[in-house]
Length: 299
Image 1 (tube, rainbow, N blue to C red):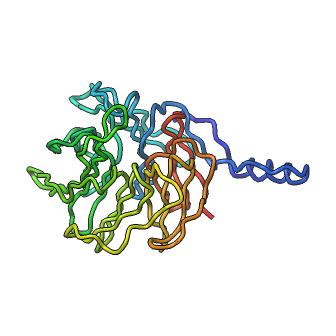
Image 2: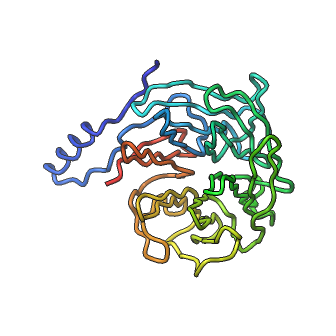
Image 3: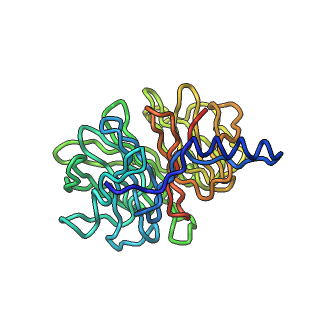
């Protein structure tokens, strides 16, 4: 396996100590930085079963149907399991601009512009697709307790202007998976990151600094939670807290629904749909415009 250049916790601690002695504030350092083979990374998914990271690489523009997107599989120590587990244009695979993904019953579901593509998690072989009729920017994917797959459509065009298709879709898996709209409204304000719990769908919005919550029937639950800044992308639950990334703030916020959110990680340019390594307590941040993925220790 090929090794990548790593920034270890030990090195970070040494740098911090030296800076402290010199009276200089040290900039935090990621535990691990992945650079090689990363091209416009939009999402990172931690697969606890295999203890690996799956990175969605758009490899170009987010709405180009160029069939050159790919999914890389990486080890937590920085080594590469497979540079291109799934690659557009190879082995009968169509994959244009992969974004959010989720694993359900051995199948990897990947959002791809106006379609959700299905792949065998182990082999990467294509297992079908589900069209989202009218969608323009399929973005995040989440599995629900009801066995269904939820998908956000941020409703954006190549200039990141609203198309008015803002929606959350729900896919019912099976031999012939079907998709229908769970919610469709401009009030979704560019729905991006999704989190589905036992009784609710939580969504963060790209066009407004909001955390919105709905029950599993699509009814609004309480008031929307306002965050300090917008361009919201990824969302992860850790214990009873939420982590939410913000492009506008170049940060990842930490807090609780209905409460105050504060910056947990800063100076993160273009933090997209991050994942969470539950074994190591790491936040896995794809730097969309930097062609890197960083693993940060959550304290």
